[in-house]
Image 1 (cartoon, rainbow, N blue to C red):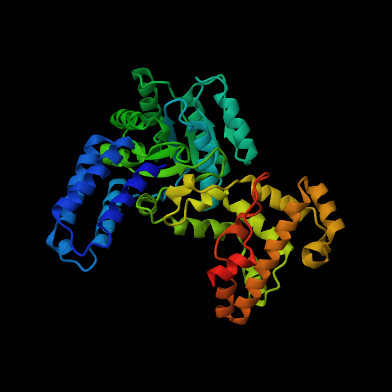
Image 2 (cartoon, helix red, strand yellow):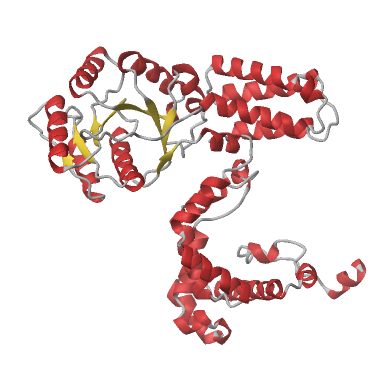
Amino acid sequence: MFETLTNTLDSFFSKIRGRPRLTEKNIQDGLKEVRLALLEADVHYRVVKDFIQRVAEKACGEEVIRGVNPAQQIVKIVHDEVEAIMGPVDTTIEMRQDGPTVLMVCGLQGSGKTTTCVKLALYLRKTYSCSPILAATDVRRPAAVDQLEILGKEIDIPVVSDRNADAIMIAMKARFEAADKGLGPVILDTAGRLHIDEEMMEELRELKARVKPDQIYLVADAMTGQDAVASAQEFNRSLEFDGVILTKLDGDARGGAALSIKAVTGKPIKFVGLGEKIDKFEPFYPDRMADRIVGMGDVRSLVEKAQEAIEEEDARLLEEKLRRATFDLEDFRKQLHMIRKMGSLQELLGHLPFLGSRLDQIDFDEHELNRVEAIVNGMTQQERTNPDIIGASRRQRIAVGSGCDPVMVNQLLKQFKQMRKVMRKVSKGDVAALMESMPPGLDDIAGPPPRGVRRKRKTRKSKRKRK
């Protein structure tokens, strides 16, 4: 998401970077491209107009034109304005002391509402150490109750349902059960429609009046762009919700909904769904999203993912092994498991500065990690600890066991030996020798060439000519 907008902003920043002085014409010409990129990203036209106007006013000020590094100041201005469009956001949920907290989740059908209720329950249990309970108040959609019960059972969260009662009775029953058993918060999965209609809104208004939820969340599909903004406006008129949960943010959404909802409705995006899995759910941080849009990456989220996946003791032992250059293939295998816990390789690379918007230009295969892991798993404990004992017969056995070619096993061992040499030089502090041993290109990292393609070899004659 936001790739087009990020690339356009990067082009804009590149044009003004390095210029000792910026003029109003330079800035206005660049902002024309930014305006088109925002409109192509399906951002609301009023939001685009206000955004461009504010950036132009601040960028053309005397303090920027006379600044030491005006290009960096322009980046900061754009970053701050993008953040202001989506924020500020308070993602904390105040838990009631006199009874169970009730959270009402509503939205159009197909927006991922039922799955989002389960994701929210799992997030609250982890974050607040509470015992949430789900209420299946969507009695209209076929199999909605079954879906909620199945998903709730997967993560061991109770679901209150009654196929012979209406939504209000089920919600009240869930509230009484939560109060009786000391559970909470209660999350209401309300009924959705394919389109907004008055009957649907009346049912939600009645449910709100009878149950009196502490907070109301609207689930909006990021893939629908301005349709999500329009439905948010209608829901806000009828219900006055407290915040938005934006789903499918990891898909091919252009980002218009994320940049428009807060500005149009006045209600912030509080949480986002980033995948199909139940644990792909997190608070929405406008500053971090602004970082990614202007090409600065999201290192803070990457660090948090690493802290969740890696135990402190494991990190300390790994640091010790790297420092002493005793890192072996068993440690390498553990690192692969840690990376898998953090998410897909593409997702992790997307958090890196100046790289997230260029992932389509990078040729990498997620299945390569599976292949490497299979090769390492095909080794015995002794072979992983001491790879030097792996000869031709052992390579053949490992290749058969991992379902790959012996050449690939050999390539992995070769790369690992090179990595250990680098580690030894780093551990000895021999930086000069390390720099001399660095290869001039990325051939060794890229691995073997595809079948049928021969890599050019550097002959001694060509080396003498270069000398």
